[in-house]
Length: 446
Image (tube, rainbow, N blue to C red; front, side, top):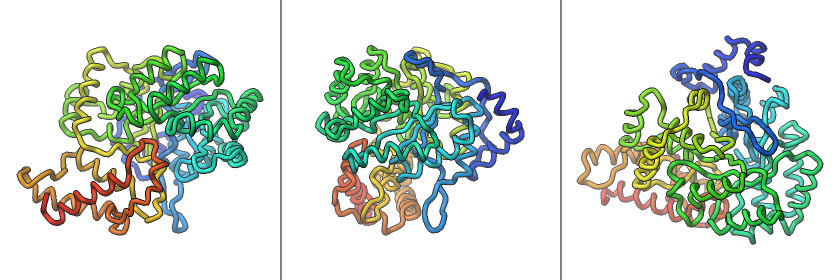
């Protein structure tokens, strides 16, 4: 469905109401996007894919019958608005939002012609990788998404544990053979993987492609102007290397975490000031998205948008898209260098670590800690200007953001969260570090 046809059906006034009414957002303050969506052509099959893709990991949530539920009305409004403005790639997983994401995405998309969008979902068999459970997960996704084929299907988060883990999840159980048969039958149009891991593991997956053992139609990598050259090198490889390896093989790239879990939309004030000095009418986040979209092998850049405001802001970036110049690219590399000087926890808020068996709000604790650093409200020592005021504010905001029974001091280091973190964060160690910091503030011994 073309944008003009969608507008004819819904009415321009209806779209305006959608823009202003989603999930209590503040979209009245967000300038509306102008111009046409930027598209990239998949060279293998001619798919015309929007450079902005909708990541469905962070749907808006509401309280319903005493439990967290997806706000389907808000999701429908966001999907309608995205499609009306040219977004046609929607990425989800059975693991997102503790199993709620696929159905919410499927219910919203099913209201539109199937040929007007591309569905990407994943085999997220982290916990149960036997063949029976894996096939059930695969088949359940069809029902959740209201479809009889997947445009883009991924092996989810391969790389950690190297080839041994990969073979256990997909090869020894016969799932690769099963999925290749599904692709031959047309139920999978493009087959690929999302990657979190070391260089050696990525090289192994590229060798599978080079030898013809497995043909990768596309690959999803974590890429942003920080991870371009400043990934930890232990559990995540520099995106510059991953991009180059995929580019020389002609493998289309889907980008995840262009904002590094939202941290590149809320950068430290000195970095934000430099960006605003160059583009005062553009958001800080737009720089991160332009960095990603300026690389020609990128087919689509995913953004997990919780409300209408970031959706509209992202559409402003990708409609009439403006690639970075060489000078601007060098500027972004400087900003990437600057970001490494802030001691944040590399948490992207994916919530794979949840629920914690002890009730700890792991991503909430990390988000509060990171935000205090990037917002320059982080108490460092007693010699700091306004230290007492910052100390009081930090402790008060911590108690407000995280209920006492869910704070870091309740972690017993059971380690259950460790195997689920795609960033390979030593979660118990980081929680312990933050708890020691909080205790030093309480005791005024920092």
